Image (cartoon, rainbow over all chains, first blue to last red; front, side, top):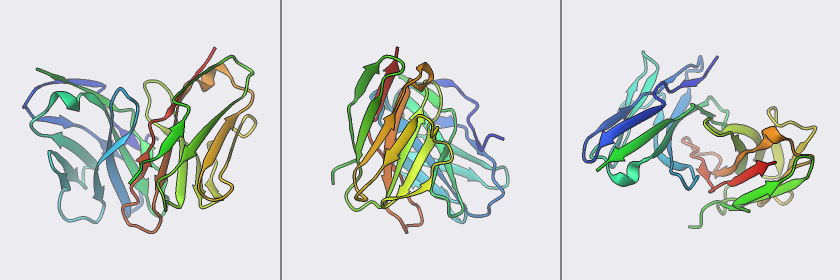
Length: 114
Length: 115
């Protein structure tokens, strides 16, 4: 079974608007971590934000926020005030228990329009 | 602080040839990972090292792929012989052990084309 599901292959957003990228996950381990990475066309994976399964509050990092709904097993990324430089592929990933490896989703391509 | 360094950035080879990729992790990071990212997909873990020991190589095609991290710092991933389906981006990442978040930091990757 897929551990991470990203159902939106591609999205367009107008500059300065907000965009929400969906991510659902599947695990039976009560301890896990959820990550979002950005991959521009240059290829490097850039860490954006982290949410731990026991964290009480939704994570925020600048213009990035994570809408964590534990009961629904979803961890959606919200990018506020989109910029042209936000155009990239975005990946949701999960780490389970004491295992350090990450399981990635298929990614969502975001294109910001001027 | 310097990031994860990888070389080469691009490599084109013919099938059945061999190729090697090099990775230098962030200084002090004990854990090193190699991922394979096929076009249009998310990265898939090939092998994970803790210092110079292998933690997980369950997804590494051991008949053709090998990796080493002899001194617990740099790492080399080798493919011999290469197949057409090995065309992908090979990403190296490192993380600092013992921290709850265990954030993995990635290099720019090596884009391999097998003709």
